[in-house]
Image (cartoon, rainbow, N blue to C red; front, side, top):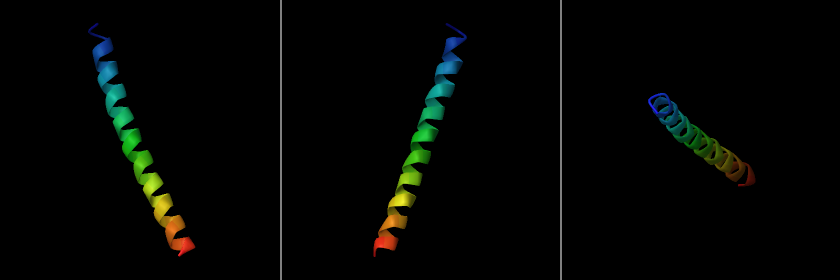
Length: 38
């Protein structure tokens, strides 16, 4: 149990970071397509 806790916290922070990264990428792609379309 002591070994699984750090792994869980690391996975949790990594998933949050990947979620923010994918959100920023999607936002940039949306703005890019919006400016190209306009």
